[in-house]
Length: 115
Image (cartoon, rainbow, N blue to C red; front, side, top):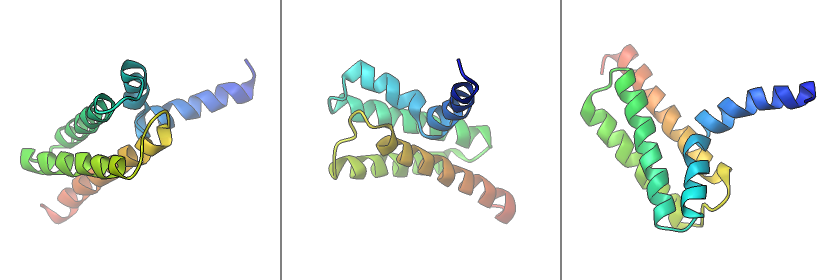
């Protein structure tokens, strides 16, 4: 293995796997062969899992986590309405990254403003 391949792997695994939701979308692709509604339901479950892990991990109230998870699933449903998600990590990755960013924004807002 070349050094450039190793560096690409070291960078790609956290970015695509964790930040862009590859830990959810790749197994969901294989499990459902990108057929809906199963595929979208598994991706929605992944978004809720991310929301709960990050939200509760940083001490957000349960109602805040529930509302944020609902918004994340709604954004996924709206995205799915406008086109398929199949076999494309980036389509779900943007939604997953926005979910993480929104949750971290809630955490920071709670710490700074005392929400």
